[in-house]
Image 1 (cartoon, helix red, strand yellow):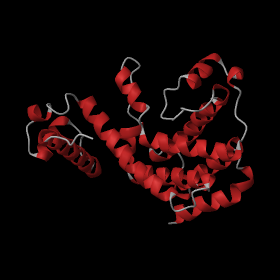
Image 2 (tube, helix red, strand yellow):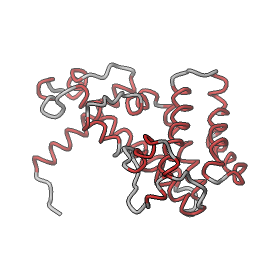
Image 3 (cartoon, rainbow, N blue to C red):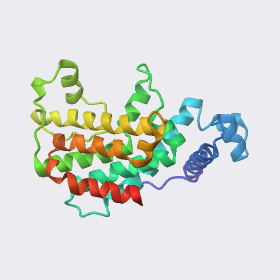
Length: 248
């Protein structure tokens, strides 16, 4: 593998500094803008344009790196459990995701409440690279390969869904997944919709704060999804794993 040049190392270091400055601004509750980032870095806005040409490029860069860093913590939570406990690893990972979102709402918003225009093919393709998305779908696939829970038949799905599972635009590794097994991709989408839905409502305060504090709605969503992924007989243990982490 070719060693990066000095110029390339310097450029990468500048990108890292851009991300650190942006995350600091978010943590402080300050406005995230090219001018604010440049000022935090001690450079002019025109100089920053050599690295990020627009506000949207800044957001995309920072969101990608935040997601990658956060995902490392979700994976670390999973690694506290045995490698073959796929149900437990999935549950503790999504619980870690919820806890991160609640403690870092501005970072969560930047990553997951950042609209993607249909016309922006590059930005839409970036979604397929989401670190957290790949972690969760990899975990769901490992669980399915272990317990072979029922999945929808591809040809029984509505046309738009059938097209989307055969040529998915989501962060999921589908290589080696046979056509007849692509119904699993629809399960991925259903799982993400439920997880994102409850976490977004909690993060943005669109729920009774007492329920948010208790985590009961999140637990209920996980409990409701358990039969879909074939772990309904393991719900008591899985709920216990969630409650342990919420208490911690």
